[in-house]
Image 1 (tube, rainbow, N blue to C red):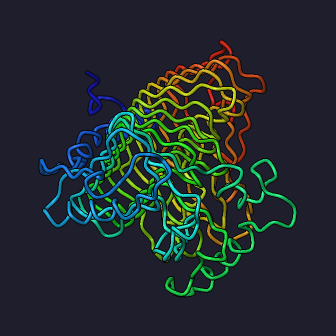
Image 2 (cartoon, helix red, strand yellow; image 1 turned 180 degrees about the vertical axis):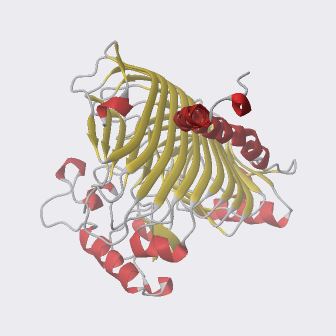
Length: 479
């Protein structure tokens, strides 16, 4: 041990300066390690709060309430009666046995588990008028009164959709999808589409028009989500297969304690996102398969002025053991993210398809704003993506045209491997608000065609990161 007191004053000062410099150099590494470990240490705490609801051992077969399994007879009344009886009895399962059942929207009530047995299919009506009267919903992150989602619940507790059966929205190039206004989805020139209504809703939200006065539905063309629990607690979606959705598929809004597990989603329509938790907390998405026409999973928290008005973040989102095939992104945050997002954990996922564009995607702009922070990924296997493995982009849609500068910080990615992509990283922030504090550890990017795009990035750290076999130190590249 050096005895500083016995050394000359000048030498003692020199030693102290050297020790101080060493500590300063050491601290960032210690902070990185500590932050990452502390982040993952939150996982068991969050998981203890995510408890799927349980139900009394009471079964209510829809066939006992008049449902006929020919796929042609309207069974809407039978679903209403069975759900009401189950709810009134204190809860249980509304059972859909083998066969094909045509219905309008299904509205769940507290303590009801809609259980679709193996070889059972619920077909949702192509008649838009079945989805009236309007209900409180969100369209692209803005609250309004619109057609009912296909399966809907508002202000309910302990609800579930379970079983090995199939939910078929029957959306196609004739029904729902043409409203997007794209010829590839059945729209024809001069036919109605969503754009005028979408723009009207944007304007209403910006002006602060009361939600009760933002009435769409009949005579309008805003598509609906497939499954939307709204302001619900204790939600379970387990095992079912979902196909042919009008728009977003599983869309919990302002919910708490949500479990989505063992679900298969195959739906390639416009904006057919797989699972979009929005302004929700304590959400587990586990062991699911996504083959979608848009983002596989997209975390959201409201759009622009309306998102800031409601001001509820998405937080404590856990995604694990999932497989992502086609889609715009495997795990996506945004673009409707004005209410903020924090504490997202992604692990043990497989993402692989020439029709999958990115693995992790964060998209926002200065009209959306919002703070996105504390994103953790580990043990991710990426086979092929067509764009960047990791893409964080502040110039989405309108770009830098607003007064709400986004913030993205504290991204930790470890043990990710990818085999083929155009870019490894595409990070593009603002000069006044760089993408900050990105940590990559033990990551291998092979088959990268065009390297990286790094614009307005601060504190990008890498440990044992390889691109096409070459070890990369991003901190030196950014100097």
